[in-house]
Image 1 (cartoon, rainbow, N blue to C red):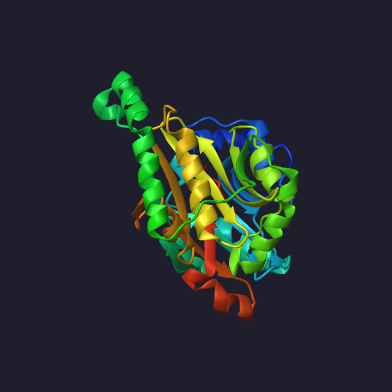
Image 2: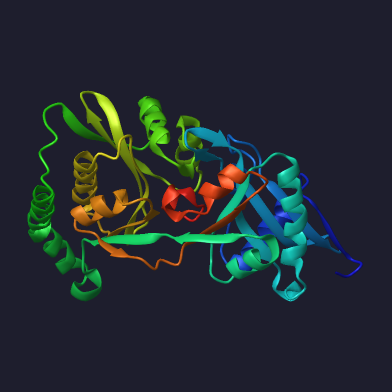
Length: 351
């Protein structure tokens, strides 16, 4: 590191330099409102941010956002690493390593129990080699095709969707019958909302009780993650039985793709969950989207439900989950086991 390069913690006013660096590294625009939401307004606390400054310009930045974990019903403090950036003319100087070292030290000193990331294949080896990280699992990708616009064109694609809507839903219902599914029964319905329903608290609590390891989700987290996001809009598809919410799916319409961000059922009931997913397929079938997709990992629940509704599974998704634990032997033992985890696309900052 040259004499002009200084490693330091974020201080107010750095946002301008960080956003400039972001646009250079990722070649896409960002804005202060979105940056503040992501890094300063999280209900679990502001992010841990370190920068490298050279001649009063920010040339590298590493950010960890609060992303607490649910460990068998107990919330534990954790960070998720996001937006590691080094300006192109300063790469090859090990700034990545020099930035992360003090961050690991500060996190451990503050009582943070773990740090994790949905890492790409390029960055992951450096985490493993330098910071005792472990590659834990790879998220699966589930996909349901609802259109063929690339082949048929826009007009014929719309006709195709109209003609095949009932056929596709009959296929889903047939599959559900094959796993001895019965109808949801009277008093069951799905309600779609653009905001987090306030009556999901009990559903979330019961879901946390059955999880071994997952991102900790309560009402305040969901409202920050989805309702307050200034950049994107999301939809909640909530399954009610007897007037009580039993599960929900969060989606984002990305144009060509409908992305399922979160999928939670309080007891992992296969029949109710498959029926809820079938609703989502039907809800978007006549939209302009071509596929419905989900990235996730858990211990067979996702496989059962998505296969039951006709989704194809692709084990290699490119989303690699990795991390490390700070001084907690009990957590470490569970942390390293892939099938202890329940993870969804919305747990990352990528959607």
